[in-house]
Image 1 (cartoon, rainbow, N blue to C red):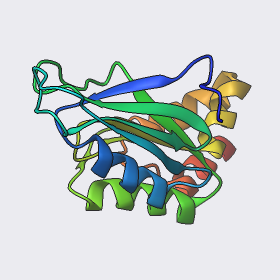
Image 2: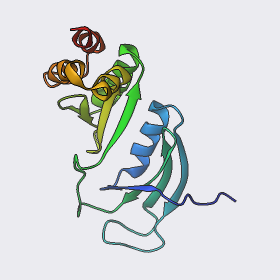
Image 3: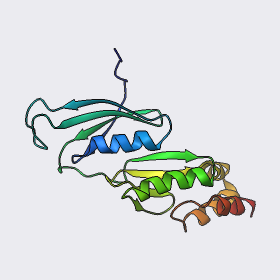
Amino acid sequence: MNKQPKNTVCLWYEKDALAAAEFYAATFPDSSLGKVFHAPTDFPGGKKGDVLTVEFTVCGIPCIGLNGGSFFKQSEAFSFQIATDDQEETDKYWNAIVGNGGQESQCGWCKDKWGVSWQITPRVLTEALAIGGDEAKRAFEVMMKMKKIDVAAIVAARRG
């Protein structure tokens, strides 16, 4: 019997937690779909027998998707940050999210079709910001003009 993790991220969905969990499991490494629980009775967001919660993992992080109805919406106050190694990986995840009914935003941020925010962040950007000084300033200024992060432009900015 699997022991429930001490800490689990719980994400509120209107009604599509299972579809979201299946998408995440198919899209990201070290991600999987777990147990699906059905409501034992009617509840404010649904009926007896509807999917109530879904256990899933995103890049090793345990999560629960709750089909809670339309009472609460996702916001940018929560996001998954996915570190990428190169432009190919950045494009892969960005295009998967945006191409599946999602929406582009600024500075490496996008939303999936369920409203969950994602930061698709190349490590070269994170490393530049950690260094500080002029290198960080140049990388940051270039990033502020982007939607999807352009790795080559960040590398060039780091060099000056």
